[in-house]
Amino acid sequence: MPNAPLYFDYAATTPVDDRVIETMLGCLGREANFGNPASSGHLHGQSARAAVEQARRQVAERVGAEPEALVWTSGATESNNLALKGITQGFAEPGHLITSLIEHKAVLDTVAELERQGWSVTRLAPDAAGLIQPSAVQAALRQDTRLVSLMAVNNELGTVTDFAAIGTQVRAHGALLHVDAAQAVGKVVIDLARQAVDLMSFSAHKVYGPKGIGALFVGERALPLLKAQMHGGGHERGLRSGTLATHQIAGMGSAFALAGQPGDAEHQRLQQLSMRLRDGLLALPGVRLNGCASQRIPHTLNLCIEAKGFNSAALAGELALSSTSACNSAANSASHVLLALGLAEAQARQCVRLSIGRFTSAQDVDKAIDVFSRQIAAGTASLW
Image (cartoon, rainbow, N blue to C red):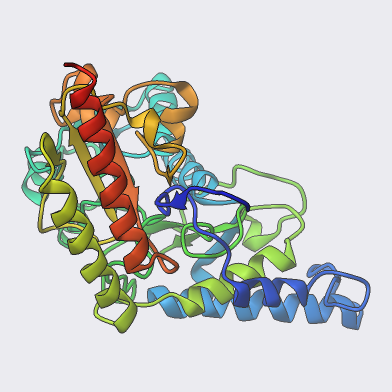
């Protein structure tokens, strides 16, 4: 892409890794593995099914799940909808559901729909550091609490929820825990064989895979309750009908197989880059960090730029970043996450999110710091 700004929006989407593309190309074209995975009567279909099941094993291995516990979907939004609507429909009557004010709109809008259907909803506010604490969840549990839905990593702040501790509390209470892990794969420890999580949503395009494919982990406690939201053929154990997109599924499997883990060399590289970026930007006048400084992934920084005259739109020619999440950006609204942190709307509109990833270099980070420095200086100078 000629003259494209440097990419600092990995939290919105990641470029597809060349190795993933190669895997996908093996499932496209007349000479490739193009068959319908449901066509079991001939070799083309059997080969496609084998590719799908290999990908299922790759995703399962990355998150510590049994392969048969994964249901393919079109992405984390559909996974969230299937988890929340599917589980609540499994109960004879509405009960109580807990979520937070800083969830992705795919959860918040779905929960609002369930509320219209009679479910009682508690929306937890984050603490001053932008965290949903296990103690807050514990205090919100009621006798009729059936389901808790919280994200593992906040998509705007990069803060990490202690979903393992929360899961232990929720399970002891007898309720189910759903975790939106779209931003978490390769960034925090996910081991569903040991963590008390009943449903977990995944997306390929946040981890260098293709858009339009995701998965939902369905644990043993959730399976008897979960009701399908798409019908027409009984695919995926009857939980999600539709012809499986072999090339996208194979791409997701490849992407998850390539995803790192906290502590590996790539994670350490990104930690170093993140500190370099963070220290450089926080040294500029009027710049402060939103969200917890320690309980966070290194990939995402959210900054409030309170320097007079600063205009984030002026950065667009040199840096590709976000002033909010993609869902809020599409609606041209201030970030609901930042508003929940207590920022005024005017402050929230002065915030930017920078997210780095696999293809970010130290030179990119230095360039970003220089761009911010020049824009802040220019904005201040324009006032005189």
